[in-house]
Length: 197
Image (tube, rainbow, N blue to C red; front, top):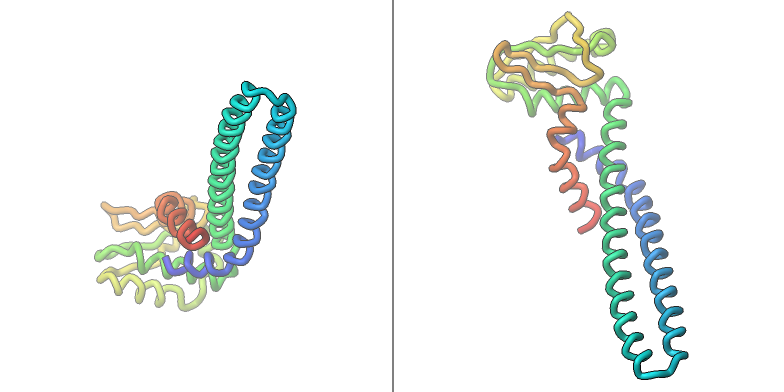
C-alpha cells in the first residue's frame, strides 16, 4: 500500500524519538538492576569467607542472568509499543486526512483491491457528500488497471470510513479497520525492519 509507505516515512522522526525515549528508559532500568546487584555483591564481599565468595559468584551469576533477561524483555516490550504506536498513528493519519489525501488513499486502495469484474464502490454518507468532482473518473482508471469496472454508488452505507467494493457475489471490505486488521502482521514486520534494522 503506497499510502502506508508515505505515512511511515512521514512519522519516522516521531517514531525514532519515541524509540530512543523508550529504549533509554529500558536502559535506566537495566542500570538500576545492575547497581542493586553490585550493592548485594558488596555486602557479600564484606563477609570474607570462602562460603561467601562461592555464594557471591552464584548470586552474581543469577543476578546478571536475571538482569540480562529483564533487559531483553524490556527492550522487546519497548519495540512492540513503538510498533503499535506507529500503526495507530498511521491509521489515525488516514482517518483524519484532508479530503484530497483521503480520497487519494481510496484510489490507491482501489488499484490494489479492484477485481477484474464490474462492480460498485459503496461509501458512507459523509464521503458521498464530499466526493471530488473527478473521483468517478479516477476510480474507473484505477479499476481498469485490474481489468475491472467500478462506479460509485449513490446509496450511502453504514461504515465509518474507507469503502466496500461490491461485485455481487464478491464483496471486498476496504474499510480502514479491515485493511489495517488484514495487513497488521505485514505492517508490524515492515515497521520493525524499518526502525530496528
